Amino acid sequence: MPNTTLVPLLADGEFHSGQALADALGVSRTAVWKQLKRLQSLGLEVESVRGRGYRLAGGVELLAEARIIAGLEPSVRPLLQALQLLETVDSTNAEVLRQIAADRGPGFACSAELQTAGRGRRGREWVSPYARNVYLSLSWEYQGGAAALEGLSLAVGVAVVRALHRFDVEGLALKWPNDILANGAKLGGVLLEMAGDAAGRCQVVIGVGINVAMPTAAAGAIDQAWTDLTQLCVGKPPGRNALLASLLNELLPLAASFGTTGFAPWREPWMALDAFADKPVVLHSGEQRQAGTARGVDERGALQLETTLGVQPIYGGEISLRAAP
Ligand code: BTN
Image (tube, rainbow, N blue to C red; front, top):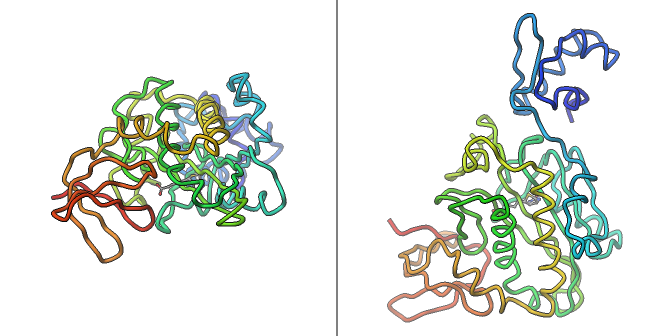
């Protein structure tokens, strides 16, 4: 992990002279300059102006536990067992799985400034640059194994949209099974991972990634149309701490109640956000293609694909959905 001790000094977005930064850290100006170069390689835009010094254009809001906790609703606070904020981690999902293996109970949340091996669906990388986006993972425990989790990832998509609506983000929709779209481009994603007994007591990690201010350089690695909250909120995205609090305000009650309610109360809200409702689609599963019309989801969260053979349920896994050409 590159040295990021300069970031808190530059977080205010104001100019700081090289000498002032060197004095604050007790290092040479050359060392400061090297650190600034490393910050640039992390995707942070360091501006340098002769006679004024250096600044991070727009500043940066680092993750702060007190600010996230302060944003939690009183009824939600008891559901959070612990919140772990890391500067760098391979994947917050992987970290929560490790915590589960070490007997952490439900309601454990983890977020990080940077993921070095962020996980996306279908084995893809989730592009996770430093201090720009939101990466959140949350654990919960259920009886009844995988069957009890049917539809949970779709319900999480609805909860994420509700968390974003609290900041008046417009144009949001869901793509089956659980992409978060804005104006047709990918704003975020959900990745559920399971541990424990597939037929009995099991733990689930709910992983959510939201693009807040994706640096252009990092975005080169994204292989689909994407957007971020900076574009959607015309340069004024919600702060990452407020966004994390909002996500937890929606996700913790969902996680806590899902074992009792299942997907039933989430089906209609999901259908109301369905980006592909009644649209012609092609399902991709490995090399296979299946064309049809998307007719929402059933009570288990399966996509209802209408073909010449009738309507058939499509369950999650290695299937992706694209508008038919
Ligand atoms: C997708 O491919 O759409 C799912 C992306 C999920 C990304 C999030 S970021 C937080 C959590 N940690 C991970 O490694 N992945 C999920």
